[in-house]
Image (cartoon, rainbow, N blue to C red):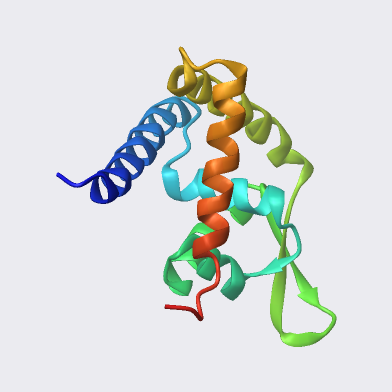
Length: 144
């Protein structure tokens, strides 16, 4: 198999395996992938509106709405009116979500530790730079 096709396959496999490892750890907290992804993205993008979050997560808006409804009922997420557009709400985490996020960070650290075992600090820095370059190369959706 050509090197250029192998890179994509290996990246896909590693991402899938890391996600599975993390999913297993998150399940011990009672969080499905759909739930932890919403919390995780909100922690990084608080105040985002639902449609933008759905696009970021690559899910249908109605699927996200159900997840947000459940998280809101559990007191982990709150909707606030968008002062710039009365038709939509902005999403925020509540204080009650902080322990879950801290536990998720701990689980993520364990998954990263497992995935990066055997790589030196220098290797990790090089890998980070390479992946960021690749992400930047692909981030402009308008180019083909």
